[in-house]
Image (cartoon, rainbow, N blue to C red):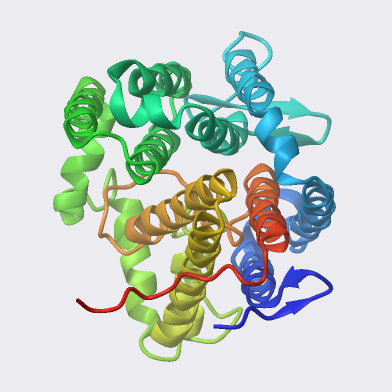
Length: 380
């Protein structure tokens, strides 16, 4: 397979990311227009802000792309420290912004920063570096495996204090996925994984609202005007879309029927307006994007660039996990959980972090020798 590049960039990877950004721009412009007009007297309020976020994300990605992988390897601890510090800062009274009972945002002038999004990237960078430095310990000793698990536990506690159960699940799954791919002992991995799964279940049963979401997920029509309202309205949006959709701008569910129409449930509005084919287009773009990132990771591994490989694997796990959860929640496949759809949902921090992740993978691909390709093993 020949890698297509233009000016040192992996063209397929860049085009897939750009396509998702364009889908997000169109989807948010349509999904937010009535909400913005009602609350701000300007139907294009969120569309303009999202365009600003896209510009900021592109600028941040350009800076990240200019920095070599060696820089991220050497400073992984600093990013983890920064991410942890932001998670602590957002919990301080009078500093963090409380919305609907969750204290997840830091107000910065007219904008807000969501530390949990930054924490995902920080954990991936730190863990990729740790796996390179402590490869043998991670693969052979409990101590080498438990150290990153301890760091993960600290981040998890801070995320749950907000609380942000969705981000917690993504961080935990990503970290364990990276450890598994690094070759950790299966007995060590399964033991800690079992404990972690039991811990997550305990968190679900410990909070009544999480239990209610789980119950609602199994039968949303049991409480159609209460806990099941969001899911039912989302399913109605999918049903109205049929094969080709009702047309861009013609969604009914965005007219204050479906809450969070331009953020957590933007995929539902997109499916209503573009139908089954439009929904499959977005799923196809995400599948191709993640597959391309995994291809870069595999190339890096074959070339001996293990930091780039682990980092790319981590990015693929974050993007695929978050996309799967968001679209799964929208379609009723998973219990309701507030997670943005990467590159598509409205939200500045998420968009900037996603673009930075993509820039990291683009730079890793650029650094690889052109001859490094995974070879098929001959049949015995």
